[in-house]
Image (cartoon, rainbow over all chains, first blue to last red; front, side, top):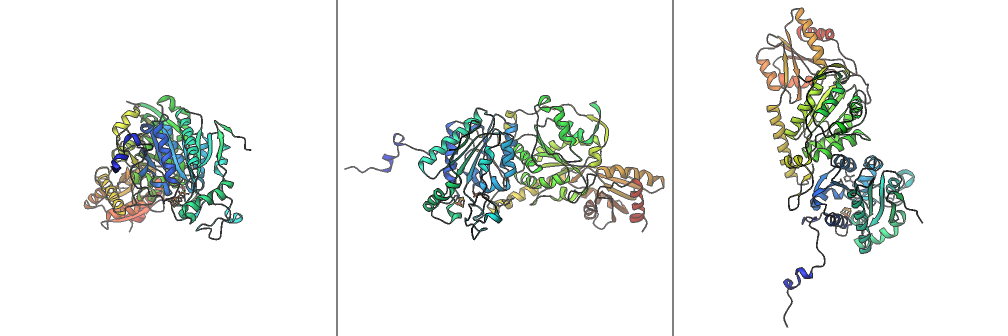
Length: 264
Length: 361
Ligand SMILES: Cc1ncc(C[n+]2csc(CCOP(=O)(O)OP(=O)(O)O)c2C)c(N)n1
Ligand code: SF4
């Protein structure tokens, strides 16, 4: 009986899946189990599938994904905390034919950068915003975010978020959907294969909108886990996310082709 | 000879932006510089040259739009006045860290806080010492006429791209608002996207297949690399100090005393010199054109010629005077004079200060 070696298996005809060329080989700085890596991958896959590598400029935020430019193998600009939509505006206005997207966390997009987010949406900038909502400040060690759920524990709400004094979690995605400047607004997740497929379709639609110069901004929220910040195992964090985050941040399209989707 | 026009300083700056082939202007209204964006909007530069003009939601957003467009290799500009320029400091620090070229103007008004809409020169420290965080510098040009408001846009972009640095046109409410004759330079062409991609390999314009990607960032988590980057920046600033000092000496050949001033204070001091010389006082004017780099060497040369005293005249409580003191380094008497909080000193007041603070004792 002949033994099967690795060389026998690694053959082009056996290939069923391959990492996109648009992700570098750098070791990702994300915690094992974190949704950021998957979100990076499908974003880059979409850019590759549309063959947009040569005309795309990405904007990295301040947050765990500050180093997105180390992993995304395209031209990238790293923006100041919260300012990515303004940076994206600056680029898109001088290069209307290029594809511009920002990739931002919830602290970046919905706290310090709220004004930049709302005004880029309101002006209908023809860009894509990918928004990772993990309900916490991951990078700085798990402080309260604008999206932190009521009662949720973080290092700056150690007894749980008290809405009377700390405010309610901000549903910025529903908020920007109300603005005439947004063309496509959706909320997705990347914690299961089915969710990843749906999210990839949404990201595809977002980039397609920009590619075909649709009048307005495409906004893709991804509700994601921060197992480190939430102090849970990756598996537990995903269960917790389904049970707690999804009821408050329901998944699905909110606005499609410039029209609000009727909520059931 | 170029086209002659009677214009406000702010309008001349705006017209020069169009003529310099600027690709984009992002701004937010504030007195006394709102004419810049008003003029641009009225001129329809998108029809004249294809230039983009956008009113941003804040100065913070405007400077970050500049950061984006500059990072993509475009010629881009913003302007504001003191409170708005304070908001821009975050973006300017990032621009310095990422080494992006841009030109911006501060038409200074009196502070602190909301202050007054009247002219001032109290943003000197912020301008030359680095108003944002980190060890950085920017080139600071100080126009003293409407003509220079226009000319420094062109010069500013030359320097900005040569050194990949922010260039500040540090004006004030007098220069921004007053009307003078200005000779406008000819329309310059804007660069095509292909020219930019070719000429500026550091700019993000889209990664060619198989090529290395381009990254614009000011971050390095490896402190040794960050120190090296800082060394690189300091070498660049040293080169600028070496090569780019600009100033004007007026009636200094026989001078025993020198007034140091820039911008509208330099205009006022010119009258003071005339008044002083009528009284037989031999005084000259060192008009600073660049505030960074500062003419240290040139001041030391003048000290060797035996200048007895220096009067730093500025519409502030005394900021530039500190740099004059450092340059004079004890080799002569140095004093400060200036009205501030929105009050503009008169030539007579400056003369009196010269007699009392420098000559009298
Ligand atoms: C002006 C400024 N303020 C504060 C910080 C510190 N800081 C860095 S990342 C961050 C929060 C990031 O959280 P989020 O956007 O939710 O991204 P995540 O790390 O969770 O992916 C903060 C507060 C900073 N870098 N700059
Ligand atoms: S801290 Fe949280 S958001 Fe950041 S990489 Fe780790 S799990 Fe992901």
